[in-house]
Structures are given as C-alpha cells and as structure tokens.
Image (tube, rainbow, N blue to C red; front, side, top):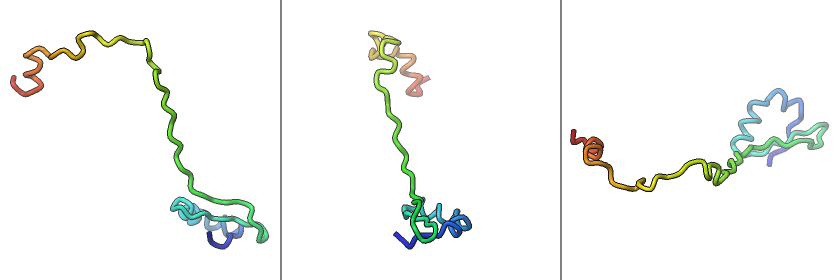
Length: 80
C-alpha cells in the first residue's frame, strides 16, 4: 500500500484514485496526516439461486423423450 493521500488531493484526483482502486490497489485517504478511509475495489457478489422455484407449477409429459415424427425430424435435418 502506498503513502496515504490527503483528502484535498483525493478530491482533486478522484478519477485517478478510483482507477487505481479498480485495478486492485487500495488507496488510503488521510485527514491531517491520519488515515480515515480506504478506497478499494468492489467484487461482485454472486446472486443466490433459489432451487425448486417452479416446483409443482408444471408437468413434463410422459412422451417428452419420445422420438419426433419423421416429417418433423426431416425438417430439422434439412430433408424437406
């Protein structure tokens, strides 16, 4: 970590300091020479996935995995 940045300098160089933080470097901001804040990169929090959200809302037909009729299969394979 580098030397703390004075709060006045931080205000005038905010864009550069944000770029430094975004690249992974922590920036310490000081008031009267005493560290008071840290500017750091944020990481995305993965969304929690809720399993079973549609449980019981629909039914898969019994013939779901049955072969397609010949004419439809031919259309998929370019045999029309």
